[in-house]
Amino acid sequence: MSGDEGHLSTGERERNRQEMAFIEVLERFPVTLTVDELVRTLATRRLGDEDREPWEQAVTQLRRDGLLRLNGNVVEPTVAAIRASELMEVGV
Image 1: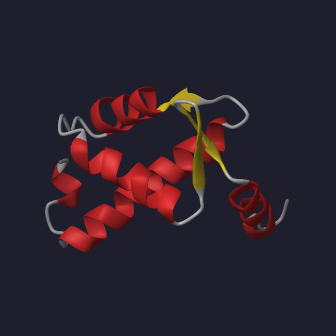
Image 2: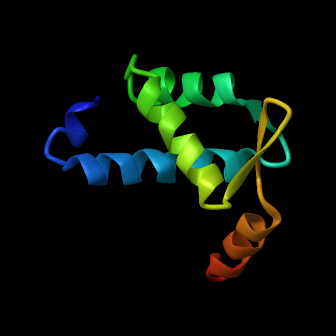
């Protein structure tokens, strides 16, 4: 984990991972990534964090929450997630 997250609780780190995964998927959409590509992007390129499991858990939790879905092995935002993102953009 990066030095910036060393002071965070476990729950805060989990929330940050979920937020980063969600934002990554939304920002790229309609371009998509596989689960492996998303985890690799987040775990290694973004934070230099070689532990993939917490990132995979973040994606799983976002799926449980109805924000992401799998289309085969491709991660996509749900329609509800896209719409919520549109509504929350201020000044667009």
